[in-house]
Length: 399
Image 1 (cartoon, rainbow, N blue to C red):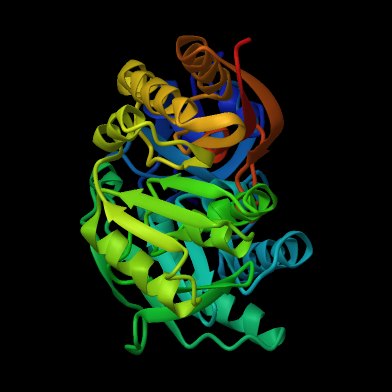
Image 2: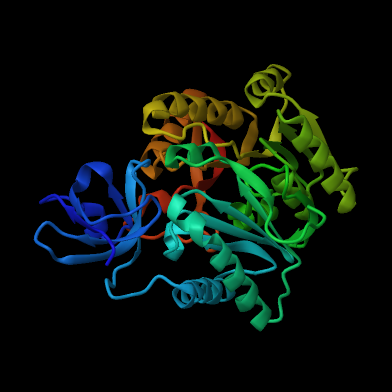
């Protein structure tokens, strides 16, 4: 028998609403012996079985639920079922040449992310219990994909995020299995990119904006486009693919800009797409002072906040770049703007844009509101799975 965790009376609200987390302050008692990372049973205060998950005393998220069936064995067969379900979902909802195969809690495999870049998989494991199972998960992915004719050439681990330390784990990265060339050529929406799965940000490329990048194309025909926080040039290259007259991509990362230029060359877009290594917050006021104007401005910043404590400062940052961005849009032009921070809620992000528009004396007409691509599913009751908010506006002068 595994250990049994009993919740305090009135606690476990997230769990009961469909979520997967139990916090340390929700637990009344633990009966039995266990080691961190072990599977335990979870009972409500009155003994009602809530399911099974892995426990870790080093984490404020004390238990992450794996199943609501207390009689279910968490074994290879169970893991393969979860992986098969995740793959079947992707086949129906997204183009699978490059996609997120496993999105943690939203795929009922809490604490692990797996991205597919052509024939290479990149694994990010962020919780102790699932870390023990990552070998089984990788094996199951190889089997499930091969059954559909997809042979995995290699697997690389990017479990080097600081959040692992909050789980009492060391950061690590490296090959799972045989070594391979970690510079992978992919194609998304008809645009080619070189992805460095070893040294690129996160798992090497941001797949969550796949269809948002596609959505800006129709706005960019014959347009002058400014792409801020371009990273490796993904929005800029989609603007060019949509027929932009000229595109300027800006990012503070020298390595990101170098990669963006290579990506432009791979697509034969280097004549129309230029990249500049600058801090966006410094550059936007300079462009405004120079009287520069663009038909389309794209704002795709990194998360300005990763905790509730810094939300106010983050809101100021979002307000500033949106105000500056709006001032650089020609009358009747378009602004694409987003936030990838879970803590920057839809309501707060929307309010922040409204404040920026008032300060810039602009009127906004919403073209559309979008979210993360469907391979990053939003699990209701697991609020952390909803993080990307993406707006497209027409920007009009007040008159």
